[in-house]
Image (tube, rainbow, N blue to C red; front, side, top):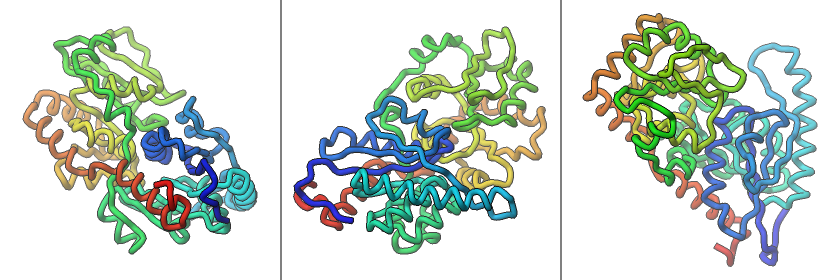
Length: 372
């Protein structure tokens, strides 16, 4: 499938969903390209995934396709999902031809796999971004046919070979451009200006284990700090009338800008989206990765660079959590050290590098011969 230079619009097809991790870097690319009149954007995701919600009212046409996951263990769901994947391939093929797509860009997610293979069938170039330290199965399957794989960490170059390029991880432009001072954030959030602030994050969908830790230790924590707690939609909401505890199920980007500005220290899961934001903002952080998951490898990179305190959830007692938070709250020198080091872990300028690579790919296939 090819396009001619006479066409005025060039379709970029993004794909990701399920969780915010595969959506956020693609939205960062969209923000960099959206003001170029040469581009139009299409998004392929799931019917009920977080991707559709995160895209919101942005000028992106959205298609929902079937999503199937190939588990590396026996499950009857694998049999059902084989049919879902087969159906998703034909749905993807229809969308690619209908939209006359120029390039497919994905940052993981199983909804992207049949789309990538349909794109390969149509000779559409595939660009894959590897966020985490460890490659996921979806990216491994797509990397076989990808024209280019970009990575957050240098270590990932060994996983993908000559097609890989180390660029860092894209970050939403709103977080870069919309600066909010700490005093302003405190005022807008109704926080006490003379009281240290702990921000608790569980990732895009929240983390019940972290929520329970906060609930179990709320009384002790509130003795020495005020808390902003993002619980995740439909997750545990702690009932308390203490004015030093502020909870939200979900915050949009502009809400996150305010709570990041207010936070003295952060407790967080280890998805690459939030780690990238914490790295860019230089926030002293306590990381609690999901046990036995790729997040542990992400956290190790930060621990090895003395860029965060990493706690093992399986060994984490209530007392140990409170002691670590209290010690970091009271140790300004340690906060400065962690804040400085965390900024060095992830390579900067990933937004610009990815946009450059997108345009180079389009030039190579002679789509933008006279446009870029």
